[in-house]
Length: 585
Ligand code: ARG
Image 1 (cartoon, rainbow, N blue to C red):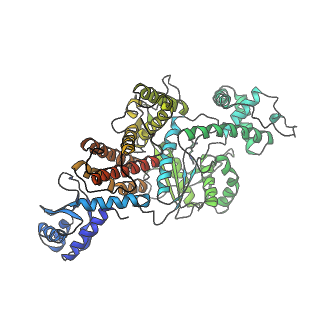
Image 2: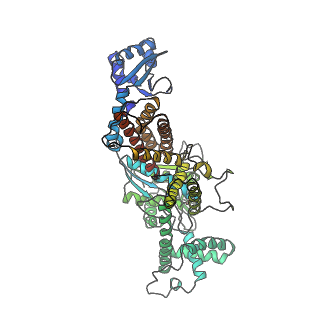
Image 3: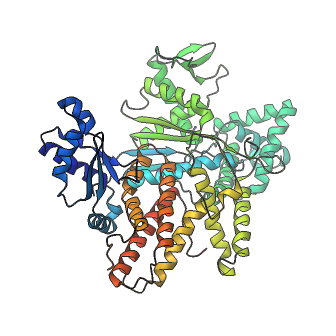
């Protein structure tokens, strides 16, 4: 379906042409003076310069031609040469009826869909998920859903941090505690036990303990390094122990991401990229794309027109170890082989922007990605506490994601129970949905690159620019529609009977524009702003219109069809944001 503003533009352009002017002056836009008109065209001003005429004269010529057009209720030429336009109420109703019947509300698919890998989540195995991982998961999930809506083939990859010293630390600490396990017996040739020698809570205690011990005990630090080396060189016992760490940790991560309504298509990790490192390095060295620098192997990525210094991308340290950048480059090799992506999007803390700039440049320079492959870094800001510092627990420690979700849910549950909003038996499920909306909308409604303050009271309020407010609007519509006596499927949207209804209808016509913008900029915040506006219109319409008690059956059906479309649009949007609405609240 064409956007309403485009239909209007075509009509106005045609009128410019019919009046003897260049049709390209006929571009219309949503009015920035909604008190005066719904749409406007400012083309008469530039046309006046081209044709050396008074702008008002041109506007009037065009207005005279547009006047009889059935699309418009009102066409005014206004000084000094604006065209102020209102759409005909019947045409508006017709447009929405078509939108309600169309697949995907008539939003066209991307005419050239791409294969897009989204690298998000990025948790580190054996370390508890903390709020720092929250933003990546929430934003990445929404961008993935939006990209998919437009027909792209999207692969969400969690890119686990499952390699390197952190693993060696854990293995060394387990060995210190349970030295008799067969994994540490080099003479052992049998089958290792299927059961891991630790639980997830033990594992989460082991990692910080090991990392602390390594700082204080040089021998232990060495043991951890040795274990890392052994793991990376295929030591059987270390590999088996690593497998256990992975299994226990990944099961826990899956549970956590599930509770966030976040899911990944592939669960690859840094470890999966390792086999690609040696051949990659070999090729780059053979093609002289690398340079030696103080014992290290690097790729220069400084470019002549750089205004700031761009340090070289280090692939091998002087001690022979490979780095974070090496793994990211090898991951691109792997992705090229597996998916041949047209675009790779990284949703990572913006403090890593230099790293990605280096990786992207190195990947281009070395031909690891094709020239046409788009590499994009979506760096997000920090979630702060009310003190303006990165969000912490009340005791000042790192806030575990699980605990944060539990606290938000409990807060909402108490509120829901106090207000007796739903039956006691449903309180928990409802609270879970509201909490998720509060948390996600609170995050997504901000520009991703900005820091924001996590404010539980504000995020979970039922009024204002919040997730629960959007859910509340949907729930209210559901309850009205449940009482509607007619056949909703057969109901047709009718011309508006009052201003709030017209506003709501116009807001619905803007869905495609907002969604397209959110897609173009990978910006879920645009969608949040849209549903906040749409919800405001829906509530105003509800307050000023007797919907169910309207005596005229055709009007009543028109109202029902309109709020039904509103509900579908809102639910589609929140699904794209990654949360959903309860039936009651
Ligand atoms: N695991 C990393 C961290 O916690 C994030 C990974 C981001 N993705 C990537 N391809 N480097 O900092």
